[in-house]
Length: 88
Image (cartoon, rainbow, N blue to C red; front, side, top):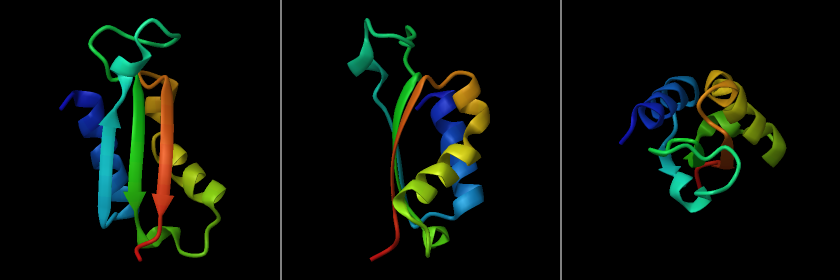
């Protein structure tokens, strides 16, 4: 696990107290595309389940995640896909 992955996990855990969290580095799938960086950690998929999303639309949930990760999105993260759900 790389440093950016650890930072993403830490920030989301602290801000949203997820019951489930997966941070998947999909950078290798984007080799040769814009934003790809040798060594990875440029393209991520986040799957997060949190009670913090109660009463929020799908778009609002995604914005919450993006807001927590605004520094990473302005820097090392080129692309982020988010699946944000409420606990069942």
